[in-house]
Length: 231
Image (cartoon, rainbow, N blue to C red):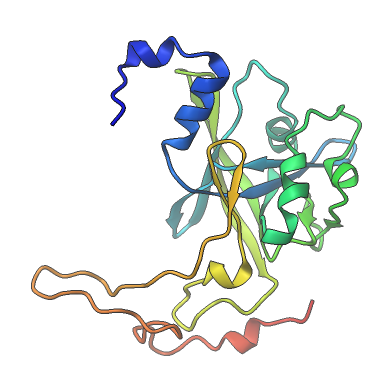
């Protein structure tokens, strides 16, 4: 077993240390952040730091790059107040990764990678047409992280669309059916298999397994057919 101290880690080459530390948090969701600048040019950037913050109100957070580098995505979010989060599916991985390249400001990553822009009604930020799971957010707060010059962006979900019927009767989304990608480290992509769901755990009994169709704890049941629209 390797045993490394903080001092030893600090002595590693920068690129080695970056890869090492980025792997420690395990699998992370792969998402494309869609924004538009003041000239309405679409921008797209891959991130692996999206996290759930709360369901009521529905809040999502993500960490930006340090302020020492060019940050078109966060600048666009500040200017417009809106952005989209688009899950990366297996068929999109190569194109999604390519958005991490430093294209000139006047080049849209949509055009550069061949991904298609989708505008949802009058929403001010573009979605990715190829993504099976996208949602639009309104900026609510930007929290500076002074320790490393990054920022934590908090947004509230304004709309949600899913390309496939992967949602269960209890609200659970089976992301394995959408073939969504996960990232480990900086550049390794994975397609997770279907997992096992367990009931709410109580001290006095062992939690059982939830069936694939979902838990039966929502009464009255939500009729999902009322919300389904053909693409």
